[in-house]
Image 1 (tube, rainbow, N blue to C red):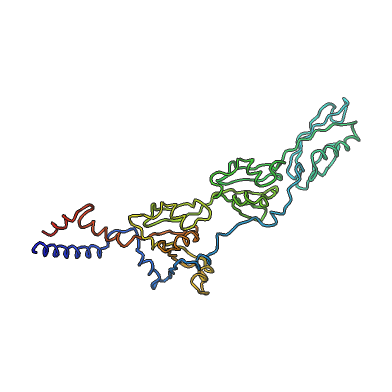
Image 2 (cartoon, rainbow, N blue to C red; image 1 turned 45 degrees about the vertical axis):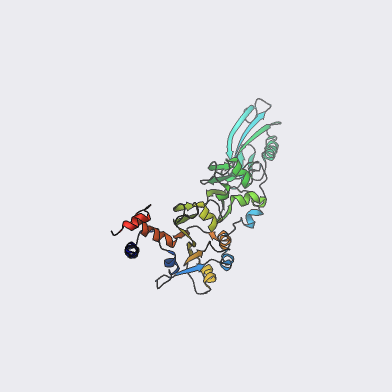
Length: 374
């Protein structure tokens, strides 16, 4: 009886110590679930806590689909081999007499660049419009003009694409960068990218940007690959940028790993984001407290909160409860966005375990409790 009374006394002292240590604030990975759910408060910049349900997942817009504009899609492919401004034409003229106008035999008159107006000047043939003609047509025209001055001239023309017949390619996700001539085999986007080594890395995370004059359009490489209508015809002077998607989210709290995490796919759900960081920490996580922190656009925040007066981005904390029957489906249908913070709170028992360990030490037995306070 005496021993029983002593044990009750010791347990009472133990409970008091637990309460004292807990109130002192043992270390933890961040705010708990209750603190986040009460995040609104009387702050200068309010924060709104939203429980994710079917209405929320249906209200949030899907990841925006990018596509090239109609003006790009409907532009016809260039006629291969046509001469364009900036091209260079090299002429070799063969005469069948010794005293011809070019000293007879084979003569080269060097390289002539097509001017901005589309013309070249050929000695004894005059000023000739080259743009839009093929090298073969130019050979016929010059042969006719020189034929009036030297009998039956034979002419060979070599064409080199100039700045007016090239496109530039840059970016961190393409095989080669530089200025590349438009040729018969690469007059369309996908063929041009293939000719310079294709894309580097996961195609699902690569975007292609075409800048044509004052117009700029972006599209996911995978969507271009899947839909041939977006394999647009290129134009001289096009600038093509091929880059990796730089979207990232921050993982904190009771997850497998913590840090800044790049997206592994373009459209990343909350469930996939959790899996990407190693899932929930089995020893610490509270599956009812999965939070996604976001600065939401004003128009979306108005729909989610049920207001109409927001004109600026709003701080929203979305709450997902994975223990509910629909929790996994909601997490699968809720997309994480660039710059989101994924935070998983610790389970209530975690703080209790920390307090217990602080008193008796990890691995202590009930025998330790019996000797406590003796």
